[in-house]
Length: 307
Image 1 (cartoon, rainbow, N blue to C red):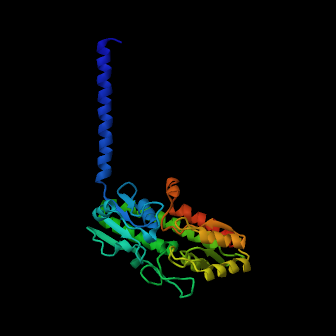
Image 2: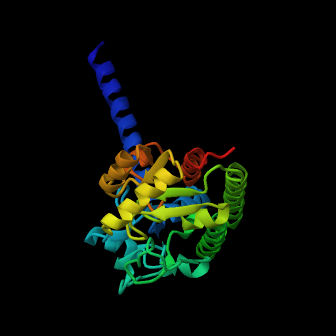
Image 3: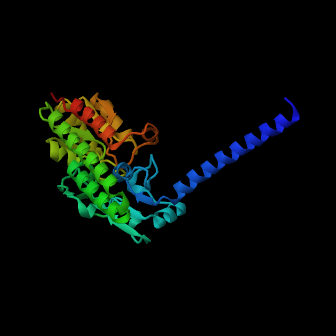
């Protein structure tokens, strides 16, 4: 190759490199100019991600793998939340950091727009951080998820009316998915030999009341609550008496107490996902609300010995 050809080749390479860099800059600028939508929990994030497509940047305030009950945002996240075009938080005492938080734009407390369940005052149900007897895990009720989907879509259309048709199409697809999940739960949990599950933390009262089973919890509503020896002994007796084969815990809390109960009662332990958040591993697998609720159904159906 002569000198002129080398120069020509170098010029072409440089030209292509500049074009590629410009395209990357353009992509980054487009991403940066897209409005951000802040969602406090995984279920709200999953709804919004499915509605907006690539028209906005939804982000979950809660980092993957962190327990929703005790999280406090860091200064960087506080700024990002503040600047977001829309903030939707779960409410019902789930996010203590919300108290006194200043929002630049619109912020919605989703718990004010869904049907909340009051808990019975028995010894398995302890008050949440706000000393309320309201169960904040309302996203485990598909009718509440439908209400949340409709409201988020409505707010997004107000913000970005040019995307109305897209948002409505995506809303209808998401609602169809939720209605199908409801049908699957009703069908699969209709006839079961057992009627009770044992869990370490009572996040499942919405599912239980909708599909006809009961929940015995080690530590009531708050996953941080320490179970009493009396409570543990009572659960061991319950597991033995009703011949349960599986008891459940969740990913973000210590499994020590529930494993000791399982060992004493000679039963299996499995994870049931309450979906306040998902683990880093579940996020890597790109699991959706639908995926996880289907897995929960399989585990519930097996544990309750449904036909």
